[in-house]
Every structure is written in C-alpha cells, then in structure tokens.
Image (cartoon, rainbow, N blue to C red; front, side, top):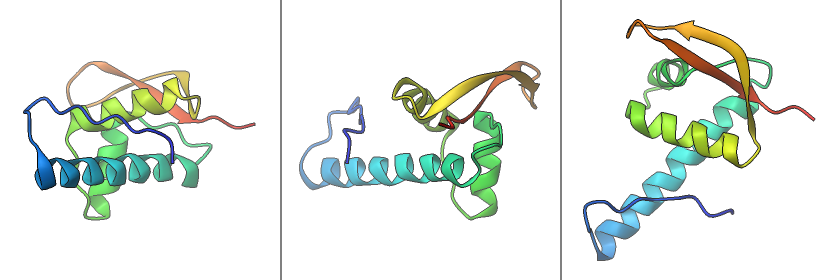
Length: 100
C-alpha cells in the first residue's frame, strides 16, 4: 500500500497515534473506492460527503478535500471543467476517476 499522509498536528503518541493512522488509511481507501466504483461520475467534496452519509459514514469536509487533493496529485483523479455550486454559495471543483 502506498504511503498515505497523516498529519499529527496534535502530538499524539503510542497507541492513540497508531489508531489515528489506521483510521486515516481507512478513510483514504473509502474515498478512493467511491471514485473507483463510479469512474464516469464527477464529484465535489460535498458530493462525496453526501454519498458516504447515505452509507452511514461521516467524514469532515476538510478530510475529504485533503484526500481528493492527494488522489489528484497521485494521478488517480482528474479535475473537470465543471464547477458546481453547493450550499456554501461558492463554485466547487468536480473531480472524477482518471480513466485510461
């Protein structure tokens, strides 16, 4: 498995840090799986959050945005020309799975 960034901004240690890293890896894989399962669908961070909420999974917006950015940087996602306005009133970038 490739290195998945976990930013330990609170200085936790030991088992608590191990658990946080494990949860982060799970979150990363979950978000990646949404895109893989829907390769032609464009998603914003809000779309991913809503999709996962329907499945009983709740992630913070900043965490979803971070992972989408990392997936794009690793070449898994591509940014589309779509800008979708969501409840915050600002256009949001839509990304989709990079198809070969």
